[in-house]
Amino acid sequence: MADCASSHVFVAPPRKRFGVRHLQALLMGLVVFFAYSLRTNLSVAIVAMIRPGSNSSAANATAGASTPYQVFDWDESTRGALLSAFYWGYTVSMVPSGELAQRLGGSRLLAGALIATSAATMLLPWCADLGGWQAVFANRVVQGLAQAPVFPCAFTLLGVWAPPQQRVTFTTFVLA
Picture (cartoon, one colour):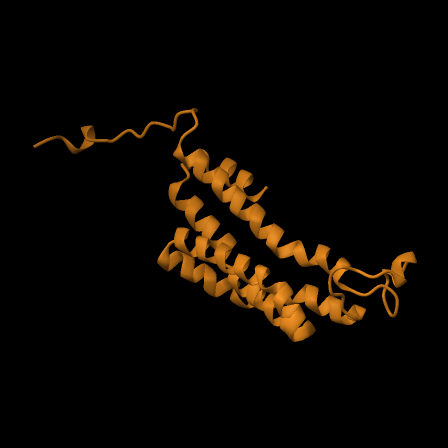
């Protein structure tokens, strides 16, 4: 029988070279970047989607010019509701998605969240054309529901595969 005191296992710290964990951190950083881009795209697009002039802060010299795309007569309160609709769905599903990430693992749920948010974002112009601001509002709520797992999944994955010595560095890189 071997002596229990002499059977300790020494785990060497990770090497300083570029490894799979670095590639995973890079890919997860890109996922977070794309998630933020999908979250904020309506904030930029809504400027072109509204009709300048009546009840609009964007009224300028181009009020009479025709545009090659459809514009909408949404007042400021409607635009504010559309911009906040994402966070309604996001807030409601944040805690359940964190629990789901712990139980199911983060990689597939993270990929599904990004794919679902991307699909909903691609459907946004169609929703605006066919359903008006109500369909855009519903689409943004769905985007929020779909994107809520991104950060719980990221933290779940970082807790599993990032070495303890580098966990803070990887987390900072992914979230930055």
